[in-house]
Length: 212
Ligand code: SF4
Image: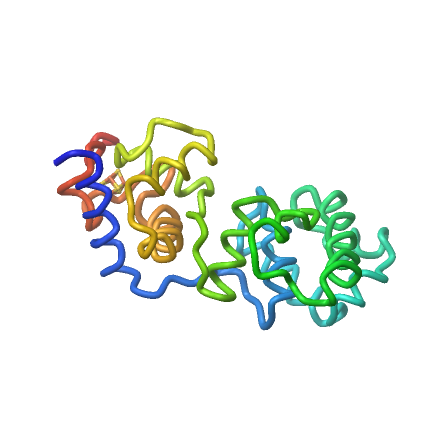
């Protein structure tokens, strides 16, 4: 089985496991998702959800975030890694959404990536979760680890991994593989002790059972 055949099989098997993968960041609207994604860098989704339960009761609109007092917002975001810088970027993001995009998130990668705190990975997540548009593949720490173990890339750099995966897989599978591989990495192909015995990919994975 060559790399491309393996990639297609990975996509097929993971789709069976996760037919409609969704982000585990709790959100009720596009603003909440964009802010949650910006806050989630180097922090677990669980922690972000905990902090945001209170945060989104206090700040309900883009205007609320745009007008927020920086020090107060930093305190409200306490518990999130790098919360000081993130609070600053969230305020700037809200101001830009209001001033440059009429109070709505732009529905394209180029404009989304102009928002402070939103880089390529975050843009991919937002586009896929909110509008089911896949212009790329989400590459986070889980996708980096899993795609390396599966021999689909040799890179650690997210942009290069995304390019490899996009070349191996047809565009119609990008939406699913993004969410499915994140969940697979979070719950099965975990960093320290991957659960190869219960992994649906263990017959085609070159790293299967090499961790014991
Ligand atoms: S077989 Fe093991 S190493 Fe390979 S993807 Fe599954 S859990 Fe990860």
